[in-house]
Image (cartoon, rainbow, N blue to C red; front, side):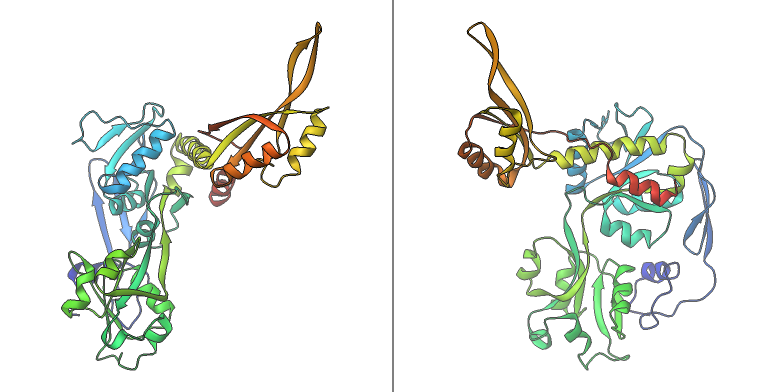
Length: 391
C-alpha cells in the first residue's frame, strides 16, 4: 500500500470492485453527503442518488482551459452558438441563442462529477474523461460521440531498452516471468480506474499502479515505474523519451463528446428540447465540414438524359443524387432550355476528381461553394438518444 497515493486509495474504495492483485478494499459501504446552497445530494457506494435539483436554467459544462477549451468554443461558434462571457475571469457565461442555458467553465473531470451530482445537465469533455470519472455510471449518456477534435488514445507504453527491448505486445508483457506478487509490474498513470480495469480484463495478475505528478514519461527512466499508461496523440513525446507503445496496449480511442445526465434529460423542463437543438446543430455542421456544393451547366435534351450522364460517374452521385434543373433562356421570342444546371454535394477529398468527371461529360461553368450545414430529416443520433432514454 505504500506505493499508492492516498487519493488513489480513497478512489479505489468507491469504484467498481477492484482486482485483488493491486489493492485490498474494505467491503463496507462508502457513504457521505454533499450539501451546498445549490443542491443536496446523497452518495452511496460512489453513486449519486435522488431527484434533480429544481432550477429554471439548464447548465452546460465546458472545459475551462487548454486546447480543448478553445476548440469547444470554436465548434459552438461555427454552429451559431457563440458563448458570451462578460469577464474572462468569470466561470459563468451565456449562449444568446439558447436563452435557457447557463454555461459553466470547469475542469473536465469536474464536469463529469457535476453531471453525476446534478449540478450540471450537459457537458463537453473527452471520452477518456467520461470513462475515467464516470466509471460506467448509467446516468451518463453520450449524446454525440464524435465531435472531431481532441483526438488521442489512452495507451500503455514501456521502455525501448533493457528487459523490454524485445517486448512488443501486451501478451508478451504479461508472459514475462519476472512479474510476481512480490515484484509486480509497476505502472505510473493518472487513470486509476481505467488502468486497473484494463489490466484485469487482459489477464495481467501482478500489477501495481501509482500516481505521479508531472510528466509520466520520466517515470521509467527514474526507476519509479516499469511502464506508463497515459494519453497519446502523435507519440512524439514517447519516442523522445525512449518509450514505445505495444500491440494490444490501447485502452481506448478518445475525442471530444457531448455528454448529458439521464435524469436531467428526463426530469428537467426544456433539457431534452435544448439537447435536441444542440445535437442537430452539431450534426449539421460536422456533416457539412468536409463537403462542397458543386454547380455546373450542362447541355442536354432533357433533365432525365442529363441525370443519366451525371449518375454514370461514380463521384457525382451526391448525398442522395444530383439536382437537375433547366436553365431557361429566350431564343427567337420563345423560352427554351438548352442547358441544365447540375447541383451535387462532393466530399473535399474527391473535389478535383469530381470536377474532372463533370467536364468529361460536358459540364462547364463549374462553381464550388463550401457548405456550412447539412440538416437531415432527422439525425440518427437523436433517435438513438430517445431509445436510450426509453422514449
